[in-house]
Amino acid sequence: MNLEQNIANIKSEEYRKYLDFYSNFHEERVKCLKRKNCKDQYIETVKELKIIKGTKEKKLSKPKYVFVYNRIKEINLELNEMENGPTGIRNFRFIVETDSSKKVADSFGELKKKFQELTNEKKELKEYLIRANNLEENKEKQIEINAQILDEKNKKRLLYFEIQQYYGDETKEEERNALVKEYVDNANLKKLAKELNKLNKTEINYIVTDLPTKTKTPEKSLEEKDKKKKKIVKRCPKGEKKDKKTGECVKKDE
Image (cartoon, rainbow, N blue to C red; front, side, top):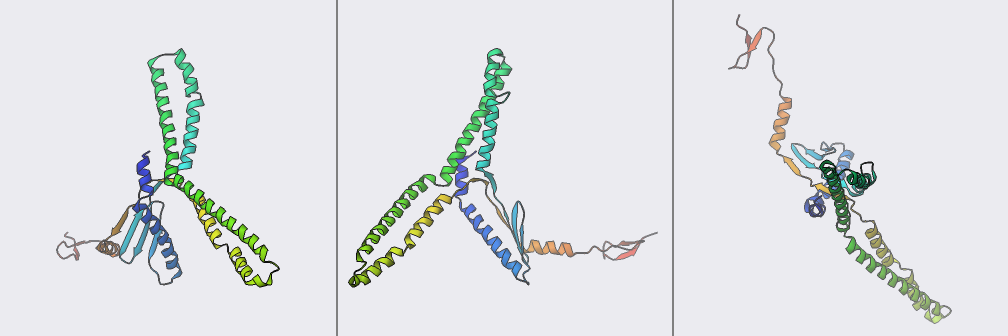
């Protein structure tokens, strides 16, 4: 696993453009389906997205992904088997003690090497999740927003007690109504709660191992392709052959 490259991929301009393209692709596809006279083609396969408009064709290969939690689960199963299985590290230690041959020692060395490689990969996957999701930065933002929410609630509490002081005093009705209006206005609290919820939900749990690539087919190429499809091969009747010079059918020489 190349941690730095995977981080670069997920934050790259190419991947951001792909996400925009993918979103627009489906929006335009729906619009086209709703229009009776739309002849554009929006084709999606497992590997690519393709748009054909008249003689223009645009293709975009999809990125390749590895899903982090699935991979960590696979690694945990492999590590458990390598450590506790019939031929695992724990049992191997007893074998090495009774059989010190080079073959056994080499096998044990390979097993430990593979175990360490998987352990390192698991560690890098966890590091990827932290960096790709800006978890350290998000923690600071969450603390800041929670502090703002608490401050906002304290202001509401003070307003409540202030409003209570005006009840029964008709001369202060205008001031009381203004405070009540301010008290019931929860727009800022809702905004802060929305920001906090967004931070809690944001999670990139996949790796982009290969970035998408875009290709455009020139108009001429598509026109030529269409001509080839439409071209009809003329065959001569039985007993005749095509003249190489004129292209016409003539009788075969007897």
